[in-house]
Amino acid sequence: MDLWNPNLLPDADAEAAAALARLRRQRWLLGLVRDDVESTGRRLAGQEVGTGWRSAAQRAYTARLAELSGGLQSAWRALDDALYAVDQDIERVKAAR
Image 1 (cartoon, rainbow, N blue to C red):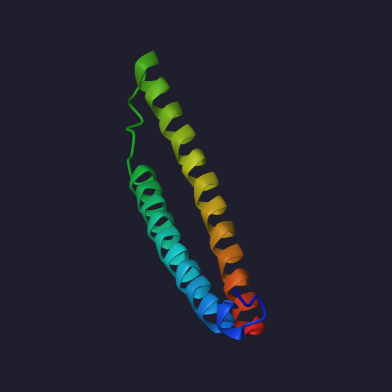
Image 2 (cartoon, rainbow, N blue to C red; image 1 turned 180 degrees about the horizontal axis):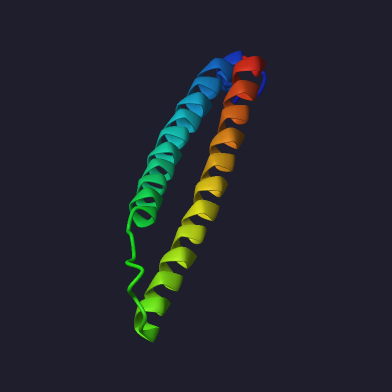
C-alpha cells in the first residue's frame, strides 16, 4: 500500500462540506428548541393569576409559575449562546475552505 498516494488522503473540501452540513443541521435543531422554549415562556407569562387568590396553594402555584418562567429564560439564553457558538463554528469552517 502506497501511503503517499494522493488518492488515499481525505478530500478536504468534502470534509469541510460535511462539517458545514452537520453544523447547519445542529443550528436548525437548536433553533427549533430555542423557539419552543421561547413560546412556552410566553404562554407561562400570559397566564394571569387573579388578585383574589389568597390560599397557600394558590400562592405556591404563582411562585412555581415564576420559578418555571425564570428557568425557561435561563434555558433560552443558553440555547441562544449555543446558536451563536455554532454560527462562529460555521464561519470558521467557511473561512478555512
